[in-house]
Length: 251
Image (cartoon, rainbow, N blue to C red; front, side):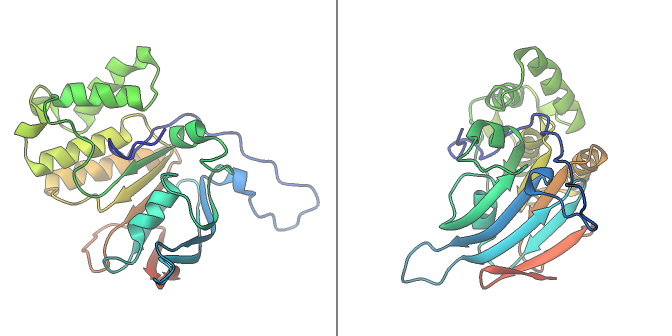
């Protein structure tokens, strides 16, 4: 299920059981099917006359961790996220959620991962906030019996009560960003990808985002946050990387 025309997010089902470690291994390394998200040897070039955007990039996101990737504008951060989300294919290499690619099981891949793209896409102007969230709950493949409850819980968690019955085109850019973030977390995803999530958010909106991330971490979810180098981020990340010349270097 490709959601580029909507918001390029998907939602969650329970992840598969962790793969057992083989016997006789003194220093076990988790198999890829025991890791929420991995990128292995990812290459991407948009045109043969241009330098590669990504060149042999490797990244592993473990359970219960937050990772930041920065870099200059145009460095390839959004390309990295779109490949990780299964929306575009690498020229070489693999992006895997719990050991399988989007091509191998697209529906399952997108059930396990949620992506907030940069910008303001994914909102229907004439829908109210509540109807937008209900629509997204169905796109996110929630069980019909869960939709109403999860939508109302999300409205409360993201402080959208006063906006719930207002049309999306009649709220501010910052309020729309809060709705988009609410959509991203609505189905309690296990792997969350965020592309410049603080855009247009005020201090209250940023605090609401932090609460959503804290809830994700409390249930051993995994977060990848991309934003330009130099952005002021007053938060802790378990790992920090900078994307430069198609590869990740430790920040």
